[in-house]
Amino acid sequence: MERPRSSPATRLLVLLAESDRYGAELNDASLRREGFDVAIAMSAAEAEEKFASHKPALSIVELMISGGVGRELCQRLKRQRGTPVLCVSSLDVREQALAAGADAFLKKPIEPRQLVSTVRSLLGHGEPVRA
Image (cartoon, rainbow, N blue to C red; front, side):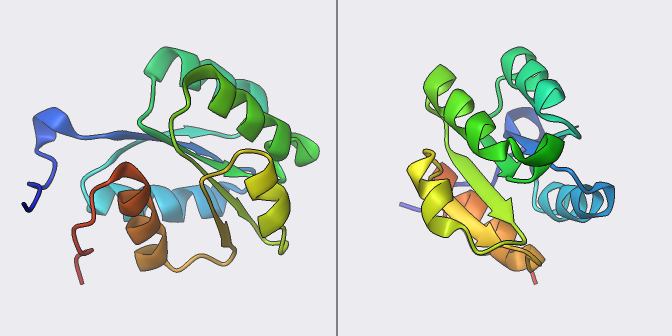
């Protein structure tokens, strides 16, 4: 059975914890274009605050956020609610990210279609991304 695309009333929220403003803006635009709402956090403390108050369906954690505490942030977010966490980094640290509890890992630079497809997959919404 094919799932319907999210309507404006049922848009899923993604928390984007990113240390790079430019990267955050690109990922924000890609996710919003595909129907997601996005809450951006530029520090680990801000990410935890928004995670608690906004209750996102999925979190994207850049591992170098706040001087490299992304791994610990990933662990805390997974422990709190168990929602999917996608870790990203310019370093090839897939195994460390998965060991920290990440459900998936993407190495930067991230192609927008790959980001959206991974988010959809983690949320169980396997619809194809728009061209």
